[in-house]
Image 1 (cartoon, rainbow, N blue to C red):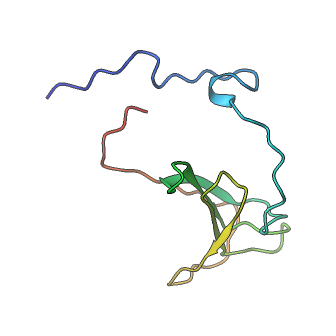
Image 2: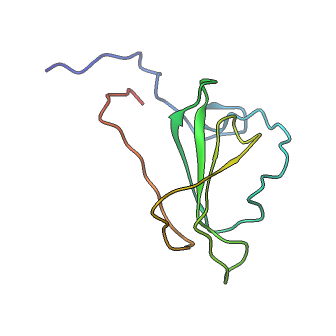
Length: 109
């Protein structure tokens, strides 16, 4: 089975100055999220919102090194607004965690 051919630069992202490739950002001022302050949390971009933007997820963490959270938050608009996600079963509060997502759908990037 032949691999799909993509333009040579479709997935290239070179670290550099803000505004170049991987580090592109509009640097908009966003209001503080309702989950702040939070440290040692995990974040993930996974899924697509109706707006076409990727969904940003925040998992766990805590406001200090001795307080832990099991909260899950998501933003469908690039971090402008946030909704706390209720999940069952509950998972134990934690910090310094990792999350991963994947798909079986072929994607060039």
